[in-house]
Image 1 (cartoon, one colour):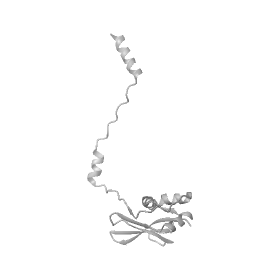
Image 2 (cartoon, rainbow, N blue to C red):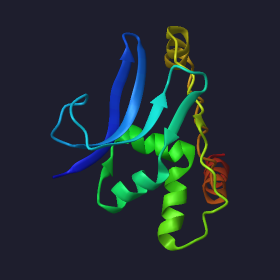
Image 3 (cartoon, rainbow, N blue to C red):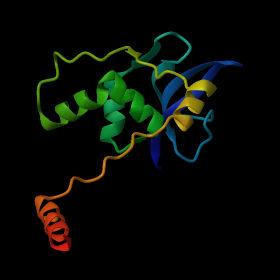
Image 4 (cartoon, one colour):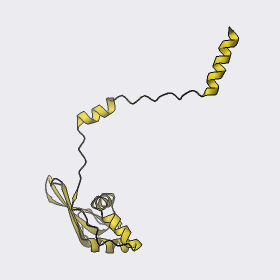
Length: 144
């Protein structure tokens, strides 16, 4: 049974709240799951992420695959680095996971339009090598 670590949407309409769960990859997004591994609340500013470290590590050791979004969240809070260090046998007792993540600024229409119409920086032509300049000088001298 292939297990994935992914988000399960909860909360009211237009007010999402997500649980980080271990679920069978063949099940629906909001279908049955095996275990709750944490939460993600994107509504708060900054967004909050809470993870049960030992349970996530246990599932990763058993071969569970995190989704792209969950992998990104785990990296942003510092779990991935801590997990990899613990796998190498290094001391991770001083490492503390962050509970908030930095949100990317949302692109507005004006920002997108400015990016499209902004003139690209002109590439400078390659400088002539000294050999080419001497050949040009010789050719002008011979024609006179």
